[in-house]
Image 1 (spheres, one colour):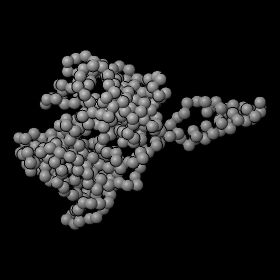
Image 2: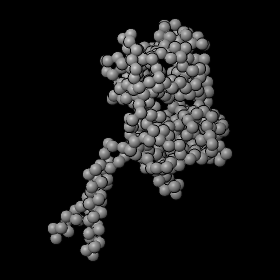
Image 3: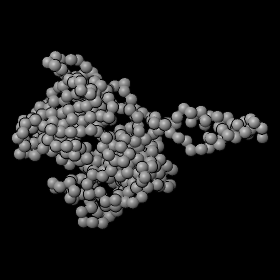
Image 4: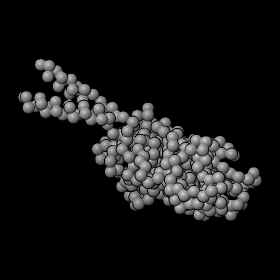
Length: 360
């Protein structure tokens, strides 16, 4: 009787909901994940940032409005010398590469990357960014100086990174228009798929477009050319190779004109749906559709993630300015792994059920 009671107790415990630890599966190629593109479950940018010109909000435009949506801009009348921005991580990270993209003819011909761990300076190097395209720089390929001395490193463990330049050296005059900046882990580092990074960094899922003919341009490519014009209802859909617990998505409408809020291209009544049965049924990530006039983070209702491996972005028609056009789309999902104790309980439960079956 006592044995039977213990077995029943184990089975009862196993039948309870599985509780996941703060451990996650890791990205298969973490060196390709931009550590600065990170949002928490509520849709808040997780990077500390400040500038000698303005606060975090201006710097954040390089992430909220990437690519051809202006990013972080210093207008042409600026004559105060150096432009500087510092990005701070919530914990030390070991990086091996950095990147930057400026708009064509709107970037400096000298840009300095500086690194620190707390209050300790770790060195800096200066480059001439390519005009209008991404420049990626491995630390091991750069001449890094510290205190007037040259140091040879292939990686640095940092808590902050600063970019700086004098925009008066721009080919287009005193203008700084930063479209993107990145920091990437060194080889050998790991990064958890914890719901704060874009899962398109993990895989390139099969994509379909509502019209069929645009399938090759579906928005997983994260560029402005990935959408057509028009004001009819439609959807874009992705089929992933594994299931994720989706927490939300970051969506940037295309930009037409010079006012982010009054952008002429946006999505009307947007809803994200998730399926875990190959499209037989769909669960809304956000039950109430929203109109995205400017950059928006669609958060899972109540902060509760939705599990699935198919994702559909739907929008409704209507409105003369609804061009179903966006310039960036990022999905944030997690792949948790069970606690060892939970796995042990599952194993014990299996043994208990096997014992009962044999006893019968």
